[in-house]
Length: 279
Image (cartoon, rainbow, N blue to C red):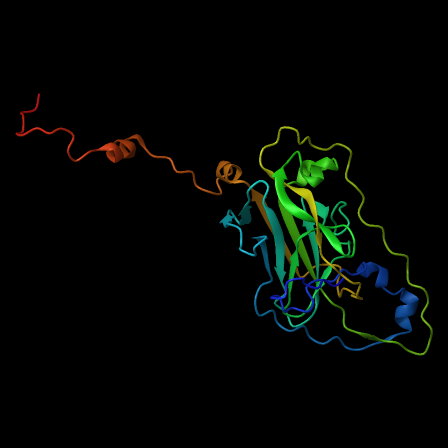
């Protein structure tokens, strides 16, 4: 699917495109033997690491922290956010996005086998919500864990994490005269997890709700992955400030007793005229 921006200031003609599962486009062994494949061109070096950010509705980046090798984002309950993915390569890439363990397109359990969004060379995807149709999404909004989309679907165990997988595109294939045989049937997406799920009733912190509808138009496009493995994987964890403080991500300001006493010290505690001897 191809997303076109509704904002006149965004001049990127293509922000995102949902594509069919690459495994469905994989030729059978018989078909592969009847095709001549061009030598795949070498992938251009990645000049910069693909950047994944969580931003406010205004586009401003949310407070982000690095802690023990993980990336954390500070959110506020009720705030709407977007996921921004930048493609640093000179070729198209596919981005599979998950929020709270749910695929951002179909709302079911996330998997690398799911279809994703295609980002043009050196382009940017700004994803505003769970896709509900080719023209709308349900906005991402920070909520309580209980009110999150995942918890309401009975899957609260992965609330608080955003994931992005990036795949390269396979080089074009030249067809010979022989008619190709039908390709193998598409593999089914990963099934739901076990029924033994955690409870979200009393969990503190943030989740992501299935918010209000927002306009976001996309179209289909062809995209075949060059590998079942992504070339980049990004994970961002999010919570409110109290949760990040409790996890040690944001240092809590605690004053030692001596520091507190010194802060209360006054330069002129009493208006004595002359010094008195100590007791």
